[in-house]
Length: 179
Image 1: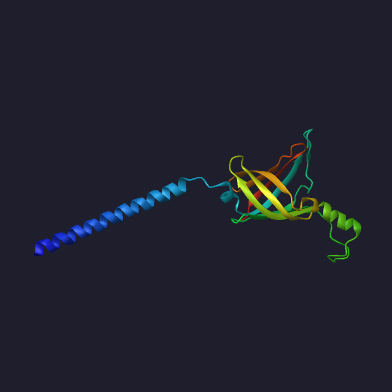
Image 2: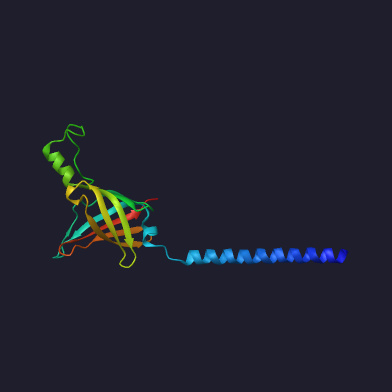
């Protein structure tokens, strides 16, 4: 009887150790599989990005920095499919009145010409590395309610959003992931 109980305990312990080893091995394999999988475009895009440059390339090869050589901007893309993008010139003059709603016509024009902001929802297209954005609101009212396409390239902490209209200039906007 004593031998039988001891044998049962050893077999039970061996079975427990074997099950633990199998479970640990399976967990390790799942972790390796998860690490080996490529993140989706949406997963890579989610986060906060700060603007590095905004450049328009004309058909004749000339380049325009519409928001200046050192533009400021931020882009947020959340996991739920919402975004906001803001770009502005960093060299805009301050309003002489120092009051938000009391700019001169020239100051207001400079602000409008030197700023673009828009927000809404987006969806990612893995096949062509693009996002479709639905503009719910924009500082340029003609964009309100429109659907637009941005091609996406992500390399490390750099994000390039490219606009390629069927006829017109190509625009590259380069962002760096905020830390």
